[in-house]
Image 1: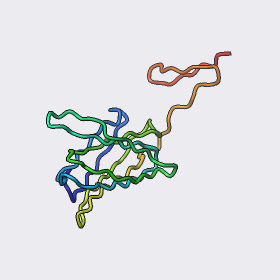
Image 2: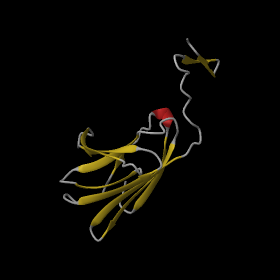
Image 3: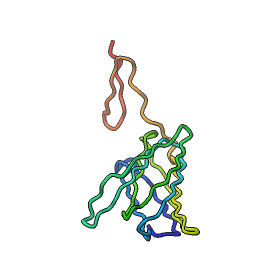
Image 4: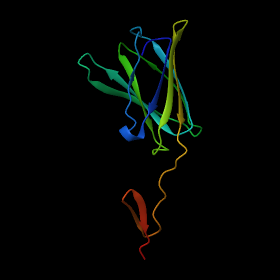
Amino acid sequence: MKKNQELVFELRHSNGFANCILLGDLPNVSDIHFITDSNFDYRIELKELHQNNSMTHISDYNSNANNLSAFKINTLNRNVGFTIHPSSKLYTNKNVSVSYIEHDSVFLVSVKMVDISNSSPPPSPPPGGDCFYENGVRMCNDIK
């Protein structure tokens, strides 16, 4: 992703919410400020991309009780990227908007995420019971 650009995409439940965003055009040593907001719980995982295209873990940041997060890292001569991992509302897709800007030598990444489906996860089976699918219909047994 290039500076002064916005990226909009959908995280899909069907592919395990796969995503990875690489931040480009960073000076060798600079601070990057992250601000994230969402209507679901999530974890941001920072990664370093190496020249052989392998990635290593840098750190994780979890949303707070209000689904917000703010943190700062230093690039330390690293190519930095991140992934978004929802940790609630796991049955629905998410809309994501990422803005990456530089102003007066300050780098800011703003991530806004919204759960977009009004569907809810399947209900739990009755106490002592189990559920299964038959011809695409969810059936539950109450075992006593």
